[in-house]
Length: 80
Ligand SMILES: [Zn+2]
Image 1: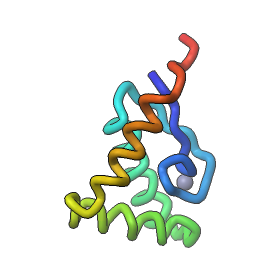
Image 2: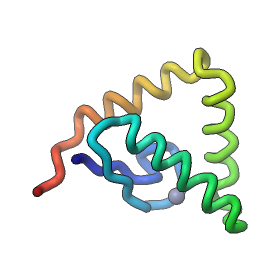
Image 3: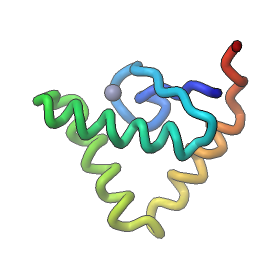
């Protein structure tokens, strides 16, 4: 398991997501963005719009995914 924060995933806060793959933390971030914006948090609106744009145009977001996967791969494993 590794940990990536909202901020490391292009978001505005330091909430930590843990997962075994980059997709796990990207999906957790997507859920976090949806929930915070739904709860009325304005600081996450821009990041939420960026993420929605990525789902709509995955081919245009390949660079972002590659960066996130590389960042995840470079992280140390969480201590057990
Ligand atoms: Zn956040």
